[in-house]
Image (cartoon, rainbow, N blue to C red; front, side, top):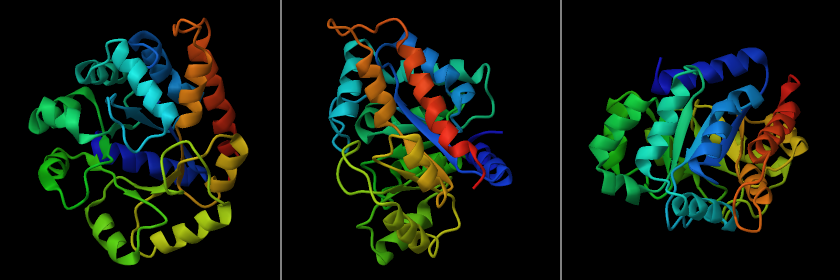
Length: 275
């Protein structure tokens, strides 16, 4: 089972379990490949249902300072697209069930070569992509992704009107990512009632599962949003935990990986009660 089928199976299982899923974001290679790989490989045991793996890029324009810094740390420590795919490949040796979504920007994919990248990502065990600077009208990457049986996931936001939603969901697959606030990642959060209203509007346009992200940092926030969404996305909180466990020289301290995984367990615990 690969790609869109693996994602669909995970959402079917979550529905049967009566709870929202936890989508965790980490940046590949942050703070280094070794610790990042440890975190990635242990995320499912800690409670991650779907994993977003950030592809390091020097100009992550949609991200706030926390994730921007993580991308730079990774690049400074030798992260690359090849190493990111190798992380996924090694993860798949022990986990064939947890979906992995690569999230990032088109520039490094373009440099890699779109067709080769999709082929290599498929072989490594990637299930889908969130490319934040590619609109749904741009088919250069979306079409080979669809042909490979993988998912192309699009972002929607409070400013996405009904006319635009029709275009977005026409090409979306896997799930729809609802950005609950306008602006960059990790800076503020939205009111639960506003999210509920927004998801009701989204569901008039699509039957795909909806994951809600941006600004979710605590088990209580995750639990509240999980009452209305099929999944909750948490990223900046985990990336911040990496930064908190770096020494003055920028090197990871003992227990860095475990600190991140403990936070994943805490937030997953907020979603474990059946809705």
